[in-house]
Amino acid sequence: MKKLSTIIIATALVLSLGQCKKQETTTGSDLPNAADGSVYITLKVGNDGSKHGVHPESGIYGFTNGDILYVGNNGHYVGTLTYANGAFSGIIAEPSTDDYLHFFFTGGKAPETDPTAGTTTSFTVNIADQGTQLPVLSYGQSTEKYTNTTATYSTILRNKCGLVKFNPLIATNNAITVSGMKTEATISFATGAEGIAPTATTGTVTLYPQSDAEKWAILLPQDAVSNPAVNISGNSYSSSTIASVPAVTANMYYTAGVDISMTPHGALSGSFTINANGDKVHFAQGNLQYTKSTSTWSFMDYQYTTVETNEQNVGADYANQDVVSLFAWGTSGWANGNHFYQPYNTINATNTYPATIGYGYGPTDGSNYTYSLTDAYANADWGVYNAISNGGNAANIWRTLTNDEWTYIKDHNTKGFSEVEGVKGVVIRPDDVTTPIASSYDADSWATEEAAGSVFLPAAGVRYTGGNGALVTNVADFGRYWSSTNSGSDKAWRMNFSIQNNNSGSMIAAIRWHGCSVRLVCPAN
Image (cartoon, rainbow, N blue to C red; front, side, top):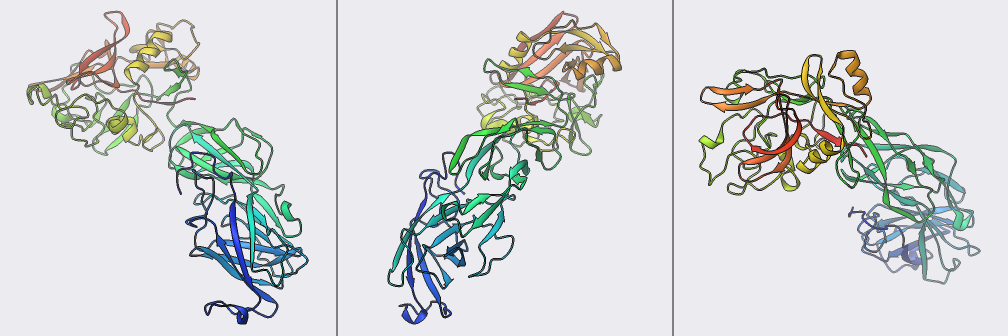
């Protein structure tokens, strides 16, 4: 399927149709035997016939081998035509010269009850499962009535459905379903142009995954649906919502997209604007940590949880400790060519590599250290590359704030020093909340604050590297939180605060091998 980036089912497909009365009147030796009263016909397809998906440049859809057209005549079903190698062909039973030939394409969906030639006047198809194909439903009538002498017929297949794009606000390869949609259509051989119509049945549609960030659905004509239920498989998200699916008409294309709001497990409720465009994020429930023995990434259980202690020597590459929560910059575990990329690496690269080679941490091609943890090097971001076990357990749900985004939050949101359960740090209020910040909170009072959306960044200290291992200092004073933004050959931007210096938040360019905290975010729009 090509990328569905433009209006897709706008134009219809012109078919050429040839016929012959019986096998003895045909010119080919490979035609099937036709019973008395039956007619063998061939339809030439007016495009490359590569698939019955849709072509974004022209809006035309093509066919793939095995696709079926159901044929009606004189008010009932008379047979099928099957696509193979550029043409439809098949046998239809006793066509009447009193009527046109009617062609129904059901997008690869089979009738719920098999039709009987000469008897069946209608059947139903269900389009709920679109996980592997988009079931375009269309109808065409021959331009003239059937006759025994006419050799060629033409028709235009006109779509009786709409195509709607869905935008998950967090890219996901998990299946997405939307409830409350009309999922059943009646194929009527007695009503001509009205021969494809939705029934009253509603159900759940599985969206077609064009990509992790782009989903589509063929929808039958229906009124707008407010707040339909949406489900994302895999239990990665604690909630997923759609405000409204627009009203659908035949041959409609809604390419602007229906946003799917997604809140992964581990996300706090508060919304924080991160730029002048109004984009918002949720913070994770706690700082990031990595367990070496199990190779597991997780969020700390509480916002006020810390791991390393003051004056602790964690050892070279955390030889003395299994859990890591103070990371050198860009140490997601992605082997992208930088010298050190494992989350437990602690080496002071300044003493190991000359300045012309660099400081060993962060995305690099061996000589150029100008990349940030974005774009081609986004996998060096801890949240993009890794599945966070208690944060949706899938990669590419979370990410690290950029330098500009940290700056926007600290400049626009209320913040101040506090203690939560005896742990010192900084509280940041969510958007538009300016109530005073208390000097301390116990577990119960902080639970109330957290439910209202407040974020707590503990003063978890910083890790340096020396001759005897890796030493953690300034716990309960310094908060050092990485951004994803590079700052020259040996530095990256981070958000700093110091309780003793009465600095509740500033951005500085810091040496990349310093071990700092990481607090991830996810979209909140």
